Length: 202
Image (tube, rainbow, N blue to C red; front, side):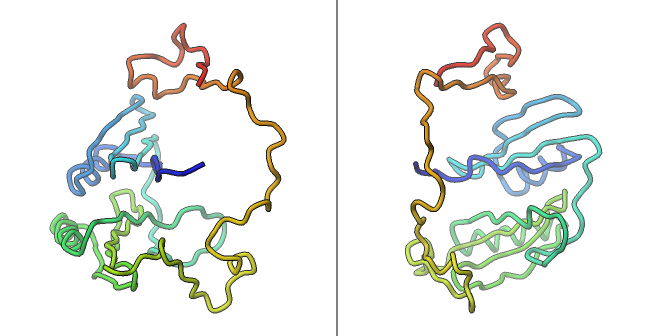
């Protein structure tokens, strides 16, 4: 089993038009798919050949609370910020100038050793980081643990540890594999509730 990237990261907005203006027209991501109807929309923006950023538009959604990237919080919480990679330093400075000209708050460039980053917020108050690699530093190739007191399991290293989870006792046979109809069929001119909306073998 191999992962190929983030197919899409789904977030929420109460104003799809403002979201389109930011992600498509300011950042330059193509709007490649749109599903739904007023009251329930799901739109996808192309980040790379393999990765997308997506938004649900639901009535009543309001921009998130003010919170700086990485600032600790207490209580229920699931998401801090998204970092979008750019190829190099020139891209980072172009983004900074674009965001500033458009009236969005944007940080100075921060040197993190392995990346240089900018920090900003989209119209939904989603914290967005933009990161450019530092030449000659590749943490994927050469992992580093700089925690002064790593957890016990972190000390086991970068590679997945086998046999710490139970193995499947039964693998789904090919004859039982089904894909059930979902909203995305609308993109192909088919409705999930069409007569052929039966599960398909995969």
